[in-house]
Image 1: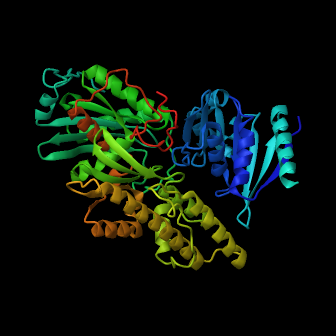
Image 2: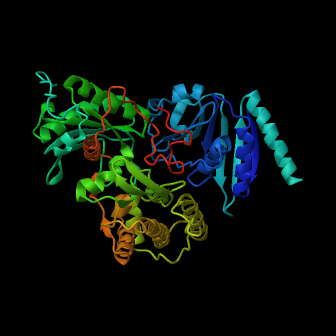
Length: 163
Length: 387
């Protein structure tokens, strides 16, 4: 199936929170979301917004850069928030236990390129970018029918916002 | 490795619940194991009438003791920990001129941390405990850091702790080995991480702490007006993530103007960033100290453990603050602020003296808040410990 792509401008933090909120309603066990983009592009901010949308606004979501993984618990599943920046090979990522977790939890993965071929095939990919004016943007890529339905939903919400 | 091992005589105070007996004991020698993150470590610490002493401390996998701001290539494999633990224990005992039979207790980091590493340590400690009959004590990794000023400077309870090691950044009032009050902490990045990421953004080498500090020496801290996040809000919580984004934006503006990043501008960016981190840390420490000093402690002290205490600008700011408030300032040596096993052995020894010990059901806890009563703790999930 062909990949579908949606461009979403993120003029402010609320726009990112709204995006996270919509995505959170489609999340299920076994889902993996890849968060791409350079440092400062907005990956961790989005992950924080998504985890808060899934668990509650009071949840503290520290950066996983140093610890590599922060694990959260919802009523029904675990969320693994990973930052693989410090890893040097896919082997190290697998040592973290990610392969098993892909099926059993919800994974949010920053710097997923470190996974190499071990990236799950049916994931949602968000590529963030910081713009010169201080705003951000994201390109969302979906490769499965379910994620593509989410893309349509996101697209509709954009139209609503812009009209 | 330990052929001919003599099972320790359990006749003295071992496995005894008689706290008085333990406290009367003249010396207590504990082996500590640590494997909760990048490093594998073993150490032997002794408590006696003169106070604590580190008989040996071995840390493997730490390429550079000065890599205090994180940014170290991780050694995360559980297998690597398991292999290194044997070697570290052997070396720690050898350096302390001891065998297992000379020990009184085995302390091990049981969380929080990466599950594979923590499990390796816990399994190893259980094996040793089962083989020797020595008491087993599961230690919270953060308690190890928080009690380090007692190991190094014999600080008296209660003291205020600014714990900024690795990925952590929080204020704790430390009242005993089992009683901690968390006053606040970072809601996103730790300051060390902010230094690392700023270094990355400006093309400076890792670890970012020392390289940004060095550049900042040559710069003008007032040229870039970076934000002081959360200073406008009450409480001791901090945020450093937005600061990184502000540095990124300022850098891009400079690059757009000059088609590159001139060294003078880079130095100014570093100086401005460091000034912002210092202002936030000093002001939030002032607030935490006020709360702590309201309790009228007998021996008021602020202990700072972690890489930021090595930054001269931040250190000077905190020193002035404690002088103003008639509070002792303590910063343990850097080698004892990064992950090590001496702090685990010491914390285990103190816990053991209080009557704590674990049996072979001790499990690894990836999440384990020190202050169970306070607001959700860094990275441990609101729903509580998994194990």
